[in-house]
Image (cartoon, rainbow, N blue to C red; front, side, top):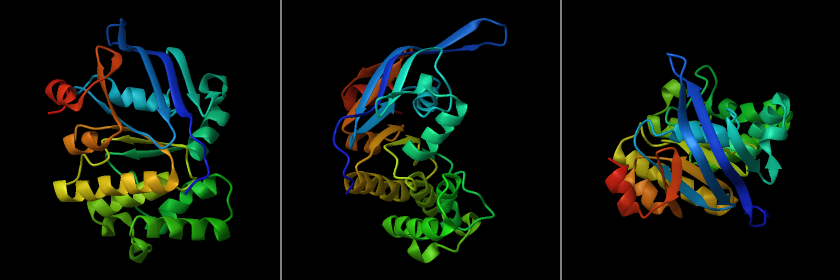
Length: 242
């Protein structure tokens, strides 16, 4: 169990994001999003396709910068960080899990998990045991030498989760993490998320269309018309979850 105290892990204040359309006009996606996520909390973001859910996740993770507004990671304002500092914060403080695992095909499961540790400057003698411990945590210790093409879809996502947790992030961001899995495999992945959240005390923000996953979250937020609102799951299902 982590020794982190409770408190806001991630805060968004008045987040706006616009893109330039093909005709040169401004296309607003987010129109003043406010969000606060505590350490150990799981927040599900739902909404119709094209509502801006992935855009919001990219902003929260420092993969893109908002047009206006502020994002704070563990109290630190991301807008104050230059590109190098932002990359370091992403590597050390944020874990990402996407619908498609994005594992490196030429590397084993163990080597994929070691990658963010090595990038962060850890020696191989330290990164190896850490990656092995994470493989055990996700139930894949016997698959450490297997490369992604030799793993099932569910196993690849478990490796992706282990890789996301390699640097003990404060926040895990997941974009449709089980969207490419069958129901039984998806349920196993969801169980893993919640077990690891309890054991390791990180905040989770996940984008999902999966009703069962959204039901298990501590809060459900509905992104619509560029804004984020707290809703009951029954409302979210009616409006946003197919």
